[in-house]
Image (cartoon, rainbow, N blue to C red; front, side, top):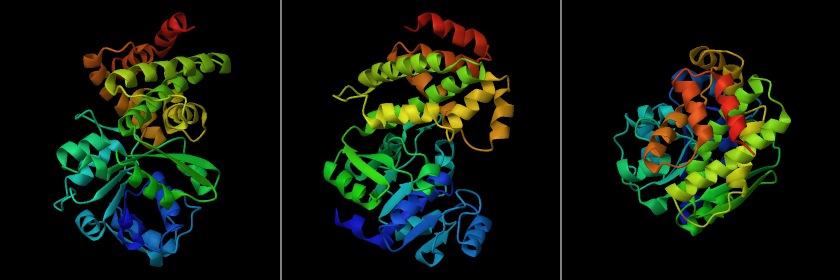
Length: 334
């Protein structure tokens, strides 16, 4: 995959913490990147300060190595490899401005979410809506919080693609003394798993807000990975081991980490915050909120036994009592 070695042909799409962490990883192995950010004022501040003014401000960048632009069409026209790291609810809004073709690009989705309303995982969305060949779409998975990448704490990423050689090639662009990589063919399973782990992290946060302890949380997590496994086996039935870090590892870090915005959101709901007030106070996107409705609608057709998903959905979208819903789960768990 020679094109992945061309450092001046890689673009980051997004201006948040995960986009910033990925830029740090890529620039450690390449000489320059393109970077799309929506707001010109943020770009101006970035250039002046030498770091993202809003996210992971401790990461210093040599901005002479970055070509910023708020024009997504110019960025796409310049790059061969596009790394999308925007919150999933905003993806369509960014792409709505696009007139450049994506079908001749390599698309890397670092979006651990699902496209709301369309109920599509991101790889499916690019394939069906933008006609990107399946073998040219790569997904990043695994337990890897942006905040720990910023601190250069040892982290593990799984690179998934239907073309394993392309996955191997891209993985080399991310590897470093603190980033370890592995590859997988299960792009759909890893993407669906990354949506579900956010849903379960909200559920875990609700339990925490209700003062359930670590003993219960361990049982909750055990049931969550079993539920995820049932869903993946129906929605994309291939041989996989859900105890791999791309599934179980990502679930664990999202449920337990203090950096997990989905757990924080759930904790606020469990403590009695309204959904709207929790969203406003967080000031960051909890992707699991949107993922809950999308997976629920998908599962209305798939009909997999998913009591945790159903409980979280009723709490978030049907104004059901968190205390009552979690109490019901305690009667089901073993």
